[in-house]
Image (cartoon, rainbow, N blue to C red; front, side):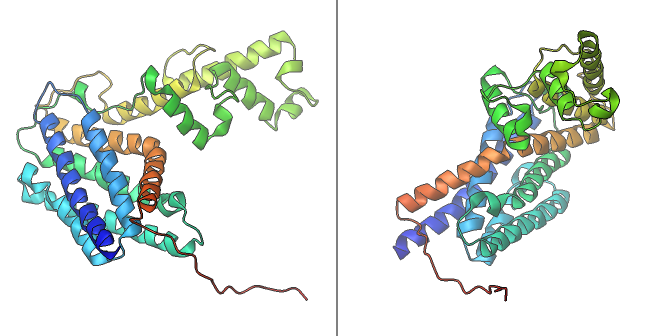
Length: 328
């Protein structure tokens, strides 16, 4: 059993380094080509790194060995940037990983039962921030980058990924998803907001909901709600559009507004373009990561349970002395 645990520990550390190098390699290929825009492989590699690193933060107790491996994994990016200045970003990212592990270990000590979500609910933010910073830094410090603005990463989901987005939105705000697991439409969102508004009785002078006001008042409420949502997405919306799509469009619009790349093209020969692209990569990766991290944590839990199933890990129950207040 001890031999299995030892093999698992060092295999885990080796995979962290190998996957990190894969991320930097795939990103280097995209940054060095004006035609490549397939961020899927980078996303997959980053997701594997998230799962493997988070699992290591939970099961590997040797902090010095684990943090040294994490730093080495980040340091391998120098192979691709070939720029000593990127050490600044690497060091900051390492501090973020150190903080992520610290929060993870603190949660483990606070919990009486194994709870993967609570172990990682805070630390995932530091881990995602480190990954976004590393990839943005790799672009900034790489030589002879060729990526075009239209190939920058974006937050987007196609029809096949809509069910995934539905689950994410349900986790964040169950009120945006109907009982049949379908996303609510713009009009349904407006109606729900109207019915839950505590100011409605004051405006209408009675306990009312959308169903018992007259047709003219309903039209006014819907029209006003659509106008408010239209302002957020900067276009006219219809009542049957899904709020999930509106949600993603708002995020992408805000990113474009900040970076001023909504025209779809920025001349990369402009001095400011390099900085614009760097910030775009950072925001898009961080935003995408926050959306899918809920399911990445689920992936960590699945791998964790598989290791227990194959007797590579075990969970022991110990009696805990607790102070209890007895009233009189």
